[in-house]
Image 1 (tube, rainbow, N blue to C red):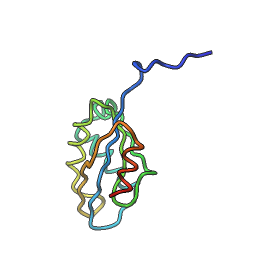
Image 2: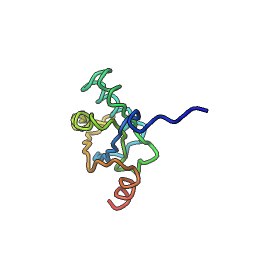
Image 3: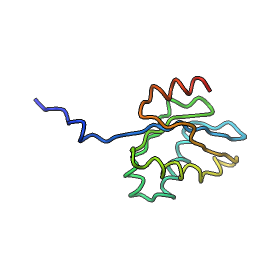
Image 4: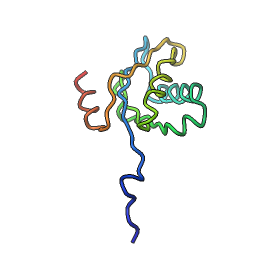
Length: 113
């Protein structure tokens, strides 16, 4: 029987609650594509893989969503998100509202705003 990996071998992660301000309605897939492209442009392929970001599409509520990333790349991911100016043809701005180590706390905070 395989033993589970010890906690010290697992990757530590952080969850970012991202607010999406845009003039038109956009889909979660459009926002995800813009985020991935911004990370690739700012961090490159190696940095993006080190950040190990994951856009959680099921958390999209029309104005905010949650992104998972590595704990040591939070500042770089925030910087990449601030560089987004457009989603499709409409002007947009992405801003990180809150960072947490627990997705449940962010989901409860997301419901309040």
